[in-house]
Structure formats: C-alpha cells, structure tokens
Length: 274
Image (cartoon, rainbow, N blue to C red):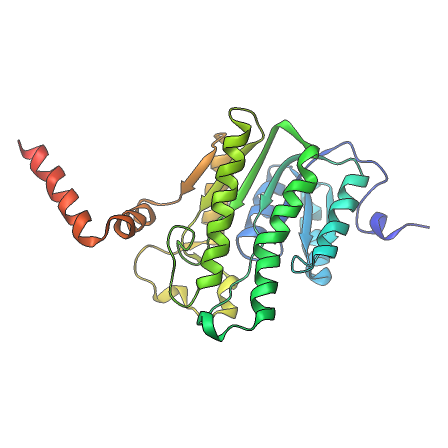
C-alpha cells in the first residue's frame, strides 16, 4: 500500500538531483519548470493548490523527468516545516532552489488588517527564509539558489505607492540574499537575486493591475523572464541582476532623481565631445 508521499512521487530514498521550485503552477514559476523539464532537470514542485500541482505533474510527464509534488501553504509556518521535513526525510540532492512564490498586497498601508499583513509577511518573508535555512544542508558546492525579486515592478529597489508591505517584503529578500552571499564569501552554493521587472502573468489578477497599459519599462512575458533566468544559471552568475536595460535605467532614475540623472547624462555627453 503506497503512502501519501509515494503517491506524490516521493520514493523512500531518492538519489537523483532535483531543482526545487516554489510557486510553480503559474506565471514565471511554471515557465521556469517547463524550461527546466525541457533540459531534463528533475523537479520538486512546492505549492498550496493540490489540483494545480497534479495538473502540472501530468503536463511534465512527456519530458520523462522525475517530479515530486509537495502541497505547502507558505502563509502557514507549520505547513512549511512539514514540507521541508518531507524533503529532508527522502535524502534529496538539490541541484538548486528557485524561490519564486509570492503574492501581492495592494492597497493603502493604513487600510490593511493585521491579519493581512501577518499572512503576507509569513508567505513572502518568513517562509522563504525558513525553507532556505531548513534545506541548506541538502545543497552541494555545485548547487545554486535563485531568489526572484519583484515581477510586478522594481519594488525591491524602491518603494511603490499602494504596495508598501509587498515592496518591503521584496527588499527583505534582496538584502537577506546579499547578506548570506557575503557570509559564504567565495564558497558555493551560488546565490542569485533576479529582478525581472514587470512580467505579464496571472500574478496581477489579484491586484487589478493591467501590465499591457505600462509603456515603460518594457513588460516581458513569463517565458522570456524564465529563459533569461535559466541563462543566468547556466552562466553561473551570482549576486544581483536586474533584467533589461530599461529596468536598470528606471532604478538609476529613482536613485539619483530625474534632475541628477539629466545632469549626469549631460556631463557624460560633454565629456565625450571634448
């Protein structure tokens, strides 16, 4: 008689290498999974919707890879702890962890309920931290960790209106990753923080934001974001990467202010004309 874990695709002891992806059932996370499956990477899929996990596992079957599905609600610490224990108990070798799961919390800060703030912080701050900490020893010197920054703006680089708690949670992940990277020095696993900018995905359904109306910086598709992230992994990149020249320019404009940026460009132009 098979156990629940064996039904989900978890053998008693698995010696294959896997890439763990949180938030794999839609948007950038799903596109990353499809791209990794095409490259024959085995996957651990972590999400809270069992039906969507089952559908994704079925969709990935033609690729011939091994998949493990773990039902886990990131807004519930007990659920996260249980999920990590399941993975650890199977002695899984992790080639990488892609921390992609997140949720939006649009609105004015003063209008949020305590429960809404707490749930968002648990899902987007506490749970990613606990999961990385719990699974740290399953990573090898060749492993990588990818933390996905904001996919609805560049919120991790600067605060955005009507998104205060979301922006703060992304900034936390950004600085946590940078601090961990410095702690490990030149040792691996490699740790990469990627800010794709605005991605046209189902993530925006809960916020009411329509990406198609954004003229600048350029909005990219989930598939484009996924392929760029995979390319960064292949290139063994580490540190912090903002995808797209227009997104990098947007951050520069914010950091320096428009007047300072115009003065900078004018100075560069004058210097080149000499």
